[in-house]
Length: 285
Image (cartoon, rainbow, N blue to C red; front, side, top):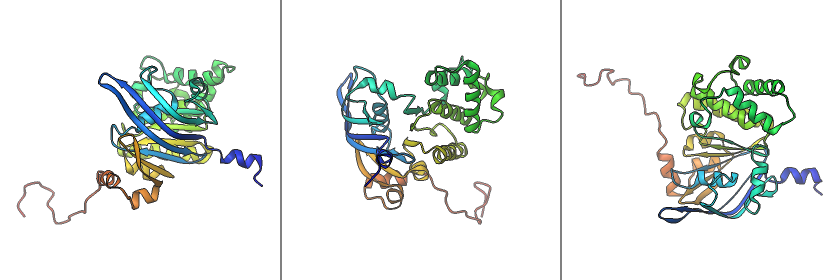
């Protein structure tokens, strides 16, 4: 017989059932998400992948209750920590920043340019832990910056976003997402604005944090290379629906759908090195 503790550990952090999202636009009502279902458990990464306009980011924003009020109609079930945020929109406000946190896509627009990173991180910490003093919030924030590999974090507390590189800003966003001690992270294209080497370091950081804390992750990306590195399961999305779902290895190595194969074909690959080719373009051979 399964113990109560065992039953709790098997309950998904995120359980989405038949989610439909209709958006009210100037051209009429558009069904952006059409009946998707998936789960995210503790310590696992589930990735939604597809081209721009496929509905993956709309799904993530719907899960978090961040779609414009009055312009989005949701149906189905979205349970976060056992609470249905579709049936009870107030539950979404209760779990955001606590049970679940968002890592936004673009740190240059997600962070305020006129406030220090310490102010922004400290506010996030005190929102979750209102009993902390400013000094205690600063100590916790410096510890979080160290966890996300910001060097000499105590000297960066009073720096402004423009004083950091894109990769460091993305790490600061991860620190802000972790400020509420969440059980689930929603990462919306967290590396799309970064170059390849910085992408790798940010993904490595996310996987290290997950291994250490057991946090669950819902990853949104258009890059199958990124999905292959971090995912346990992949859902391939097109026109608001899942066209293919399964373990990451199977989806990447043996895709069943033409659309998935087209996404794979779009991933850049290094060609063979031709040692006989001259280094000077147009030179005679």
